[in-house]
Image (cartoon, one colour):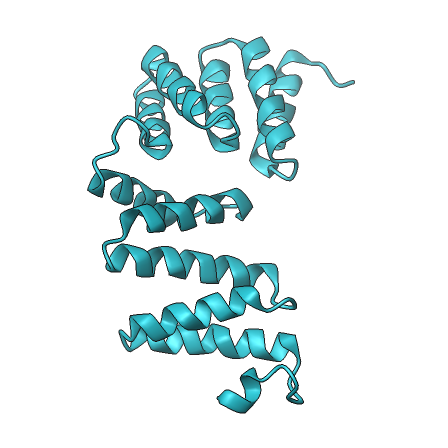
Length: 195
């Protein structure tokens, strides 16, 4: 593998990024965590690695940090991953919540507040849901998903003006946030505002 990793080899940065991706995957599956971490960090350092590979590497680094019981490091990687992931998986949020739980940082867990809001919104307890989403936003004002969920709660309780305002905030934070655009469009449709 060494000749591939040499910057002056016949292999391109894209080739090296792919190699590091697979190398990290193989080492991770073999439970050679230190080597997997090195491979994923090398992938991220490659200038021609693509976004999907980098995002996968960051998520894998969060898992490796969690396995090593370095929960703060895991949280850092997960927050970076969430900031750049267009459609984060529930597994990512679950791992983040677990990491916050491990360090007993219950008050500052934006994920836990967001989950608490979602649970209460599902139970039609909108006042509790709204308070939970607002707490998540207070901790992390650029948390687009919490703004979108807050807007959903306002929409579901019949407050389209606050729903519109919060969908727009989510979109301003995350301009490619398809769910927020879709939900905003649905509110405008319900109001018959087609302009």
